[in-house]
Image (cartoon, rainbow, N blue to C red):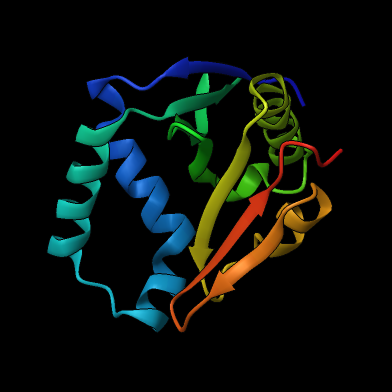
Length: 147
């Protein structure tokens, strides 16, 4: 499926919160309990740290992701797609693109996700392996040399 990317703008702020809520509400609720006020504060902190990339399909916002340079590694996060775009190869395409960037820069990619999230198999198919986990999160990485 063809998609375009662009940097998020202030007009995307509320969409990004609702997208995160749609994607992670159940997992956050089961792990921490959902606190709307706290989630807005976390969203603002993430927004102020770095703006994600918006994924658009046919001119409509369909998702987001962030690939952050952390010095010796890249951090992949804020990866959400609206449900109607799941299973269409978009996630794999974005991961392949990020892996190509990491390979070019000879950096590993790190990520984490909430326990109970459905993304584990997607990341595993793209060479990510679990480095650690706790009761709340699973931490993964993909080494630069992994092909």
